[in-house]
Every structure is written in structure tokens, then in C-alpha cells.
Image (cartoon, rainbow, N blue to C red; front, side, top):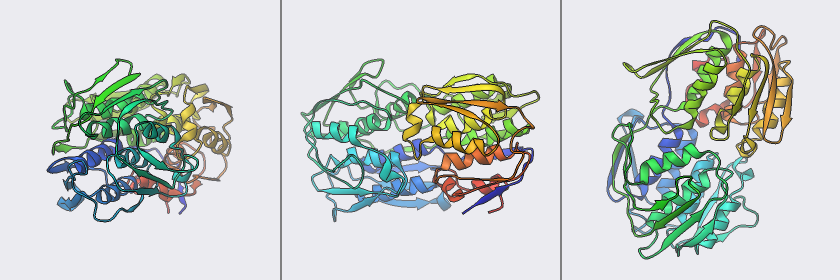
Length: 440
């Protein structure tokens, strides 16, 4: 599917979709819990539907309630309920679901095979599989890519796990407390990107938690870890409790309407975001403020308002903790005056696409030159009014964040642009093209 966007000033009052990262964590923890959990306001997207299919394959009983606004899950109590049939599990496009599910599958004694779509077949799980093998879990795989088959039991031990993506570590943190009593899992982490996502995982499972997220699922699992997250010691024998929790709004998704307002000189008010949330992508509002936007937060209704009265300024931004912001930040940088450097984000190359290379390639179609580095990109901004002087077709490369970033950019161009693979936005942002006024 292609989407065409005609430039306009992007403004409005927008309810931001629920967080994908929170939704997937809640779904999987509820599926492993003893009892019935209620998840309120979950994200309904392609990625979360893939996660739901995995939860069902793991033996959870799931009921969608309240016209899609809530989910009721009866958990499998840490695989104490046997699987009816060892399934072949399709994770679709969801890397988070794949990596988390691989570790969880090591808790049970049947071979489970995992597969997915064309993009997920290019995302390596090799470091995670090496760690699982070191914990006694059997893995059938040739090269770190799906199809991958997993079988327990989880025997414990000490493993070294470099994490170019934090999802590897979060996967072990969620699964290892449910290993058999008497086992201990020790994880040494020599490399950790995307630290806020680990903090999000810990916010669900660690003890002595302090958070402002309302009625969140606190499991109080006992374990030890170093302050810099370089070492974890997790005893087995714990269990997850059923819970009732709400899913907060998604700062990753909020970046795109915020970027469209910043680029076009409009004003948006974004609802459903909690500034105290663990999501690292709230950093995008700091980026926009540094680039010359006005950012206002209202405690009364929990809203962020983004506007711009002057020119966009260039800058240097370290995106190591927030690589999902890379496409949106690059799009805004194209309209800034001068060079903007997005740095320390090598792992943007191992997402759904090599996002550094893709953004550099597609921005040139809008007349914006870039200098590509191994760990980032310098965007040589042209300032508002000098981008997209010719109509063009942007290749979305099947990557939801690429297509949404160029949808934001289109609002500041001089001519309409067409974006291919537009359907991929549904991976995380339902109703995106209607919101952005696209012709599809």
C-alpha cells in the first residue's frame, strides 16, 4: 500500500496509542502468572497481536473485553499446565516478542519452533541463544536466525550476554525467576544498549519498586544486580501473581505527531503520556526543545503540547538509549538550519532495517544530504521551506518507523510525497494514516 501526503500545518488534539513495550511485557507476564489478570487499555496493533498468538501458544486463556479496550488472561502458572500440542509459533514482525518468547520457551520441556515474517528472519538472536545454551537450554538453529527451536529444562549457571539490543537481557530477566527452585541464573552484561527498556522490565519484576505508574503490576521478585546493570544474580523458584494494570501511552509513537508539528510549524496537544514513566523515548521532547520548539506539560490533564514559532536549530544528540527515535529525529533534523548529528546509535542498524542507511538514502530524495557514520548520521539541514521541492516516492522499506518518519516530514515539504509500504505503520500505530490525512 502507498500513502500520499500533501503538505499542511499539522495541528490538533491527539490521543496517543498505548505503549507497545508495556503491552507486550504485561501480556507475557500475565500469561505466565497464576490466576486471572486484567490488562486495561492495551495497544491493539500487529505486533501486540503477534504477542497474543504466542501467549495462546504458551497455554494462556485469553479473552478480549470491552470492545477491544481490555484483555482478560488466565495464565499458565509458569508452564505448570502442559501444552496441548507443541506448536510452531509465528511471531510476525515483532522482535520483542521473538526474543522474550525464546527465553520463556526454555522453561518448559517440549520442542517449540519459532518463525516470523521476512524482516524478522534478518534479526539475529545469536547472543541470546548462546546464553540460553549456557543455562542448559537446548536450541536447534544454524546461524542465530529463525526458524529456531527451543526446549528446556532451565538448569541455571553463569553466562555472559552482550546486549546490542536490550531485548536479550529483558528476555532473561522475565524468564529466569521461573526456573526451577534451587537453580540460580547469573548474567554478566559487558555491553548494554537501550538501558531504559531494561529499567522498564525491572519496574515490573523487581522488589522495592518506586513508581508513579498507576496500578502497575509489581511482582516483587527477589534478586540482586549491580547499579550499572552489568551483573544480575536471579534465583529460581519464584512465580508471577495475577494482576490488574493499565497500559500508559507510547512515547515512541508520540514522536511522530510531535515531529510533524515541529516540522510544519503547527501545534499538537498529545494526551495519555506520563512523564514519570520508564520509557526512554520521552527524551524526544528534550530533543525538540533543544531544537527550538516550545514544550508544555499540563499536570491537570497529563498532556504535552508541542509548537514552534522560530526556526529549527541543529544539534548533537546521543541516541544510544533511545534508538527508536532515530527516524523521527532525522526527519526533524532535515528541516533544521545546519548540521545535526545523531550519534552512538550503531544498533539502529539492526532494527527492522538498517535505519541509518535507509534514512540517509531516502532523505536525499527530499534534497537533503547526509553523511553516514558507522554509529550514526549527520544530517545537513536545509531549514524550513527548502525541503522536498519536487514530488517523489519514498521507499518505506517495510519499516513502520521509517514510513511514519517520512509522513511527518511530508508536512514540511514543498510538494506532496508518496510513501511505499505504508501498511507497516499498523505494526505499532493503528489509525496512523487517518490521523495524518493521507490518501491511501
